[in-house]
Image 1 (cartoon, rainbow, N blue to C red):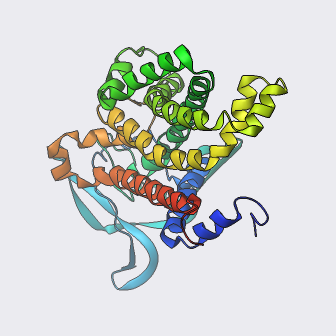
Image 2: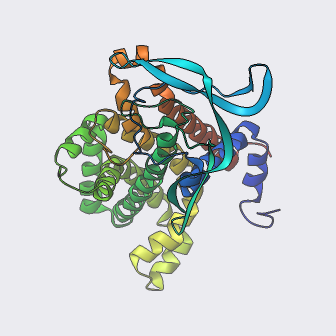
Amino acid sequence: MLFKGTSLEIPFLKLKKQKIGLIAFFILVFLYLIIPFQGFLAPYPPNLKFKNKSYQPPHRIHLFHKGKFVGPFVYEYEMINPFFKKYKVNKNKIHKLRLFAKGEEYTVLYIFKSKRHLIGTHNQEPFFLMGADRLGRDLFSRIIFGARVSLTLGFFSVFVSLIGGIVLGGISGYIGGFTDWFIMRGCETIILLPTFYFFLFLRSIMPADISPDQKFLYIMMILAIPGWAGSARGIRNWVLSLKNVDFVIAAQIGGIPMIRIIFKHIIPQIRNILIMGIMLSIPGVILGETGLSFLNLGITEPAVSWGMLMSAAMDINNLIHYPWILFPAFAIILTVFCFFIFGYAVKDALDPKTQV
């Protein structure tokens, strides 16, 4: 057993019985494994535009053509009304689908160059599994590339907020007195602010003329600030309850610095609570980024995120005529749902009151 003989053995045994939680965990692992292989899995680069393919409907995959089995293929879509973006299916033109088809060059694992994609057409004609957007870009490819920002932003923001919460909460609970009062009043002020409007305020003071990488960093910090206030408050209470136990007092007598005592002797005692908090905080960060990007205040072109892709759904007319633009919403819902399911499974596994 992986955790046999350790303090995690019993929680691991409990977690193994959480079937739905394990399914959610494997779905999340699959989603995160997409990130390093996004160039291979996506048929096209995220910003590759195809002329005369604006809002093309998703292709339907067929196996039989005129009664004969020809393998997986799609029919050609031809635009008949450029103004209303109306298409008709031309059943005289077929495009056979191929695995490991050649296409645009990309980087594998950010190191190696390749032109092979998981799926494509034999003649390199456009293939839209989930349809195209307003500019004729493949929505399926953009969802895959958008996973990099939407999924990693949650982990980075929660990590930053956790570090800030440990430092401030640990210092507040360990020192006490005026320092405790001052830090906690500041945290309570941030907690009392309406979170989303606080996001909007922080976003409004962000510089406009910055690169996508800098914008990612700014958005990460914006989403992390409300999180560290709540983390600091909770960690402070745990530090207060643990700072007078024997092993902490022995460390103080031994002359160990305060920061080392907090990180090495106190924080490991509450690691189960921190793990649970991380799993349940990431969905909130993902939804926060989605909300900002949906309003065009978060990630913007040429970068791609799921929230930014959802901004096309702000127009009700687009939703009525081109419903496939809602596909990014399903990716967001699936990810958030899996995080919550797995988070509560971890919570039950770490709860000493539950049975093995």
